[in-house]
Length: 66
Image (cartoon, rainbow, N blue to C red):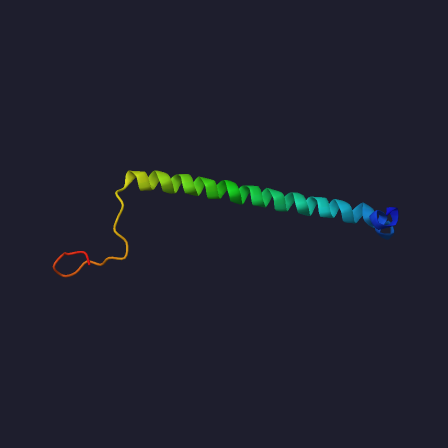
């Protein structure tokens, strides 16, 4: 097992590179999750401020929603 972790003498470089890569991926995932939550809160706030519009309908020439 020690041979595996030593990686032929290059383990000193490989394992820190893996650690940095994993750390960056975790930071990116956390930032993405945080921005998604911020967007959801903003959407909820905006939807609460504005009345809900009917979806899928179109306005005819007479002004009726169809």
